[in-house]
Amino acid sequence: MVRKRKKEFELDIYKIFLIALVVAIILSIIGYLINQGFEISFSSPPEHNVTRIFNASDGVYYVGDIINVTLIINNYSDDRFSSIIEKLPEGAEVVDNKSLYFNESNRELRWAQLLYGDVSFPKTLSYLITFSENGSYTLSGNYSFAGGNDEIDSEFIVGNSTLTINPAPQPEVQEVCNGIDDDDDGETDEGTCNSNNESCLEVDGQWQCVCDESKLSLPDKPSIVGDCNGCVDINEIINFIKKWMRGEIGEQANLNQIVNGWLNESIACPRSTTSS
Image (cartoon, rainbow, N blue to C red; front, side, top):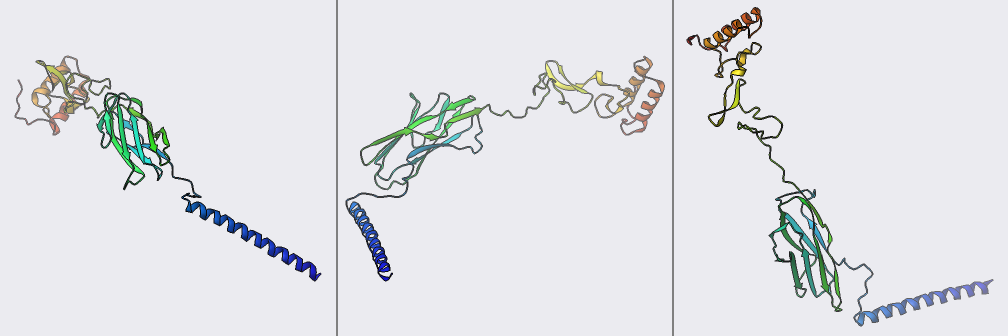
């Protein structure tokens, strides 16, 4: 029994020795590779691309808006050269190309840089564009990186690419006295005159608010009867009575009530006004 346990203990020691030997060999190999200039990384390399971003957080753009386009450049540490070509659609107008070169004939924005010295990444470029017509527009571009192993990596720019340009918002249109339906609501010159018994009419070729006879002497609205001066004078009361006598206004009780109201209420003009 003692002999069996001794044998098992010797086997365990042997296994531990073998494991330690394998680990030592692996560490020696890694050390050799590092001394030979090999880089060993157990993490993923940084993403190698150029990303396009538009400035509006809500993605809503209108005709005439100045749109800031940002290009974010990510590169590998051993890249030696980088270049970008950004193709603009027809209808895009460059407001400011900033550090990019704009070739108007082929509608391209270009940028290139040697990656020597103190160059930090990610690097950010930007330019400003605008559109004079609404519609859908697509930007396209590509980038190239030249690495230390003389390989050239060329890919399409990723990120935002399509812009939807909406018609410019129209300011609220105010109706004015001009014989035109300015606010396109089916009514012309409504609300353009301050007094209820004025109308917007053309007088001697000029549109203006004038006293409208068709709105005078309305028995159910004595406050808007008269010559648009804000009060009812004796002449207007007499004219109203004449219209009643011609049968253009209702019953006698109605007449008495209205005239008496004018004479007793503050709407009546001073009694110094005489009739004609």
